[in-house]
Length: 172
Image (cartoon, rainbow, N blue to C red; front, top):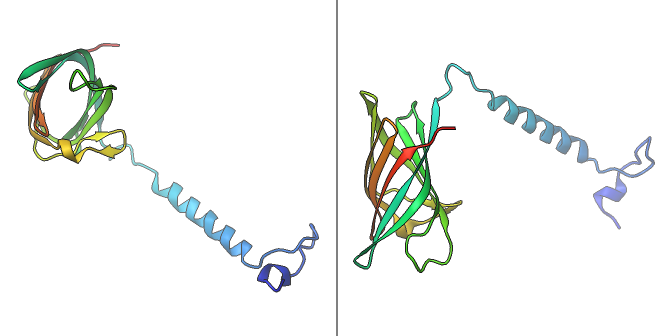
């Protein structure tokens, strides 16, 4: 047993042998943790303004020539005022009647513009996500929509499937 661990001197208090590389490794981990913590400090005046609004409405999907309506679907829209984008999060959706489970779908990085109290948004060739998994087969194309007052509506294609949403903002 001629390893570095067994050739090192005994620890003066514990009486066990110690690895000579343990202290530098622990010091490195401590420095890493302190540097990560210092990077997480955000200046409140420079922090982006994120605003999320929940809408309840109907998602309609055109599938095999027929429209499939999903009533009472929750859609969260989070607007990032700093970079001029928003994220659409559709909760518990079934895109077709024979779909075995409902899924959550996120459409990130949608361009938006606010003008006269109305938000217009659009996007093309955006990869949506279900959980953390990208759904490249259902790339979002032709996304366009508006938020005006308490009303939100948008239309897009998830891959080859035309989809639309119309809903009303929920108040807490």
